[in-house]
View 1 (cartoon, rainbow, N blue to C red):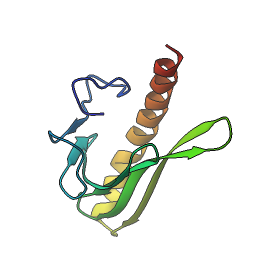
View 2 (tube, one colour; view 1 turned 30 degrees about the vertical axis):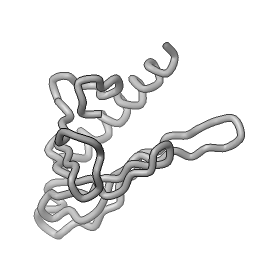
View 3 (cartoon, rainbow, N blue to C red; view 1 turned 90 degrees about the vertical axis):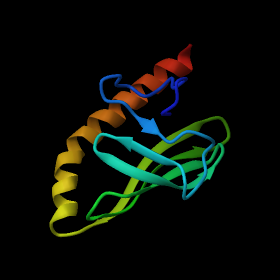
View 4 (spheres, one colour; view 1 turned 135 degrees about the vertical axis):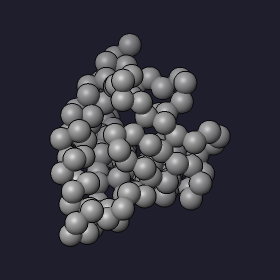
Length: 115
């Protein structure tokens, strides 16, 4: 995601950007939909977790792979504590956009995997 070869980000008009170079926790940053985050943790084929840098929003969002015998499930999870003012206002602006983005991203991922 966020590279010139990105195959699953669903909205060209709503770009996902990340800092150049290899993924490095504490250094790699991302920007999209009003979100600014820094890479918190990455384990290839297991998870990628971003820490929010937005005011009033203390927490993470990430993608997690859960494998069983024949299937792999991809889960997007947000875990955050919101301040009474900035955090709650930020989430109100982000909540609908996040829902639409995740639906579109998972739909596009499904189409890409069927190729």
